[in-house]
Image (tube, rainbow, N blue to C red; front, side, top):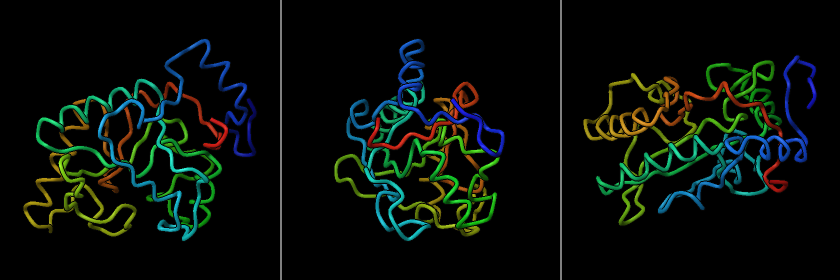
Length: 207
């Protein structure tokens, strides 16, 4: 474990991460596709369709700390009773990628600064949308993922009624399982336990 130039403690050793998991199983980063039936992935940062205009990840994987992943599984189960499911755009994000995002955007509203790090780096944040379980069709929501416009704000109301309704379904389902929405991004949710976990800078291919 090392302290970086911003004074943050960031775990960048897979061995150290594995040691911590061996002592505290809840620290494990769980692959969501192995835990959550019917989950749809649309991992934009493994493609060029993102803010950077190039892939930020070498692998399209969605990982979260075990208690956060289990809470998301409960969201999926509840949505299933409505014929709906989750689409995940991003989950755990290595700290070094957060630094890239901030250097590109230079706006703390939409990118966590490197002197604070992101709750994504802790494996406790997830970016999600809604799909129809039967067809995989994406439900209309206020904007596309990572569209940094006023309509991305969760309090923005100049939208069609069915879009507002879909956003409210997602918000209610996530809130019931301990997720808190980041108001400037309708898709971004932090689990309430985020402060219990360390910042990580581990690439997907090493996990």
